[in-house]
Length: 321
Ligand SMILES: C[S@@+](CC[C@H](N)C(=O)[O-])C[C@H]1O[C@@H](n2cnc3c(N)ncnc32)[C@H](O)[C@@H]1O
Image 1 (cartoon, rainbow, N blue to C red):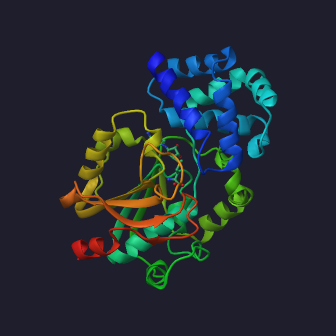
Image 2: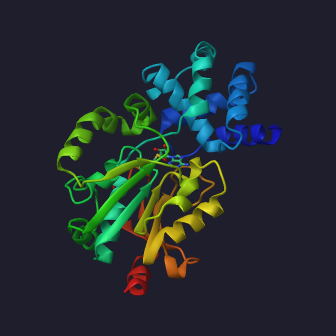
């Protein structure tokens, strides 16, 4: 537990620097200064009692999201140290409960433009499983106009606008949808998406790609009987409380011959936010060439408003053909 506590303090400190959303950076930089106080230590201890394998970054964000949830988004702005301390004391029991049971769950539609482009590159009917699908908005957005505002060059535009053949779309997530929690998970930089979440959800339910959404854990994918052409994971691996190498094997076994796993996240797993050297990338593995990772696409950050060809875009096309 002591080791974990030290790692968590380091992560909070790290999140207080860098090029991320300023109110979030400010929150972590302040939290780092008070992380030796008893009220913070109690939250940490109680959470670890219940979730000993919680990852450092996930725990840090759960504190921030819990405060957003309990204060009706007071943490969209930069708060003084005094306010943060008094909220941690006032809401202590509720924060503990949330940190013990919840998962950070944004659902950023634009990330799935990576999937739209890669499906178009593959150009064949595909059964897609999205693990950590949240509300399923990403899958529902396929073949809609949801990506039209994303900046792309003419080659990518061709693929992005192409209708793709999704034979079945299945979303898997460990937690039940909870709209208020979901809203609290949107960071201030994505406030606009938060305001629009409900109407976007209704529109996509009506007009988007039909999906099946089921509850389940990435740690139990070995129990899934189906085979997929594409397994998709975005912004989930940092939350997984278990052996990731097992997860990778489960995903490989889930794939049909020629199937691919698309994992989209920051290039360096230990750097949780965007920098020039750490863009948000689509890392693709082909079942039969598992040890090779193709960076097919990239975006400056995980809000994905611009998409560029990744370092291995051409190579991926060559190998896949
Ligand atoms: C940060 S959200 C990302 C959602 C979506 N993929 C996106 O990029 O917009 C991560 C999602 O993974 C889910 N999750 C976390 N751990 C999981 C697990 N062990 N198995 C399945 N889903 C999990 C969370 O509930 C959450 O909805």
